[in-house]
Every structure is written in C-alpha cells, then in structure tokens.
View (tube, rainbow, N blue to C red):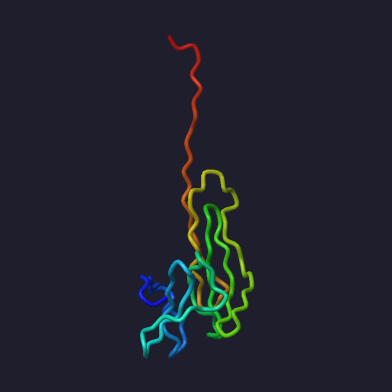
Length: 131
C-alpha cells in the first residue's frame, strides 16, 4: 500500500484500543496505520469496498460495512485471524425508490445502531385524449 492514497475514517477512531492505530481504507481494503511508523498494514480478510465502522468492545475485531444500492452488510473481522463473520444486514423494509443506503453507526454497547437511506419516489400520470 506504500505510495497509495489512503482515506482515514475519523469515525473509526472512537472505540479504538490504546496503541492500535488508525483504521484506513483504500481500493484494496482495510489497513491499520501504526501511530509509531505511520505506515499502513493491510488487514488480512478485508476486501475492496469494506468500510470500517468501529472496533468491537473486546478490541480484537472491527465491524466492517460493505454496501450496495439497497443494503449494507455488516461483518466482524478478527484482526489477528482474518476471520470474517456476518453480523447484520441493514436495509429498509420497502426498497421501492431506494437509491442509496448508509452503513450504520453502531453504539459502544453493540446493541444499538442507526442507519439511513435515500428514497426517490415520483408519480406517473397517464393523460388521454389530448388535442
């Protein structure tokens, strides 16, 4: 990842364990940036499109989101093992007109969360017998 542009997600800093570093993401997946060296280290098991949401309570895994047009799948990724476990999928009950879904903000207790979406609806009128 050296020399590539990385995006630092400031929201991922909350809940991090002391000494863990910042979480960044690039086209290749998630990386941890060491506070000592500043060098990003790829996280085994991360995939392109993953976005870090927060550290787990235990501090040994990250919640990662991967979204598409109508849903955000959230997984737990073990930092040491690279093992990935599905956690929850966030999607509106009715996806009609949904053009985008945001990945959730997860509370520190991991029991509460909030997510949003954008819906664009319109009406179609049929006009007959126009002159």
